[in-house]
Image: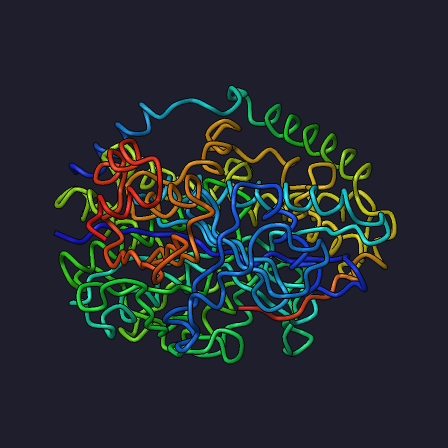
Length: 64
Length: 495
């Protein structure tokens, strides 16, 4: 189908902005997990210390 | 040929802190702080919004208001945007843009405007009163505030056809462009309370069509305030959307909707999927199911998942572009980019969420919420998970989680900064922004469809701008180059 051809063509020419693909699925999974672990470490550093109070005090008036 | 899909986004930001912890005062402090330090400060003109107000009566309010200004502040920025206090929130309304990507750039500029305003305000406030701003849509306690889109539509399109075409899209697009939410805020049986939802806003919608925005919110809003020539144009005001931190999500949200509107204008209802039998129930059920398995019964006796709706709508948009081109929405490359990203994000949320966690907000947020819960073996209602949700939307660079999850940017810092200082070139926002930038002292007020000049003696002079596609750089840049004063500009305009 013409449409499918066009889509495939677009995909081929799409700029490759993302990180290079890892070949094997398992190592890709491990990489994702390692990235998430680093991210969660960072979240631990910046997350509001008293989450309970922070969440309780976040009260907004309706808008629009 | 469909008319140009001029478009823009209005965002009400969440806000905490400020003197007396009063959100109205805090919002005014934010707007005034920016008015004093940013490139702005012309009063908003309420002509047409509150008839009877004399524009001259607003002319006395100029720069250097006290920092704790409790009057509801209203400003027009040099980029053609409006920054003001709406109810108890600071709101940034982007200037009118000619393409989805342009509108994304001006939306991101709005985030930076609020970030600067927050910094300016906090430099003058006691640290105990520091203000924090959030680009989100609910407080987790049942209070919601909006992120609205506006699209220029030909007046000749029947409103009923707009409803028929757009309900399936507005019910289902959340699986691609939803911002995600921990928990639930509206009454529902305990057994069906979701732990995580695809959308911030979906559960607040109670009607299919209506005029309200704060109570009984409708999926299709009927507000008919054109801010232009109402015989030729309609401004479609869309209130069912989440504020996105992902620039790709904002691009697809705007681009997909604009393409569907152009298709409706050029070829009618052909190809649009049938609507759900109960759209309100559908939009809430789809939000409450991040597995995306929920299917809803439609008026054509079929049952569709949100993915099915989006697949049909994407196919319709793709065929429309193949047959008609997408000029009403953007140039060839931009329209292909929108179609390509819409397709990829749609396939990704179903088949490989990890692959689109860099573009889909609800997937990016779910990844850290779930990851954090697993790491510490937390209960589903642990406050830390709600805190992660809120902090995803925090505009402070040191606290923002959206800034840390690896979202792909569309625009670099320079082009965002340029969108703070320069209006879009291809709509009437160009004329408004240039006037604010060059002749701030000669402008009494401005709004979407006019600029009012006060030249000191004689009556105020209003320059009307009923057509969003005029007042562009192509039509008026030479006037600004050859006329260095407001008086010269007005006489060149024949005023």
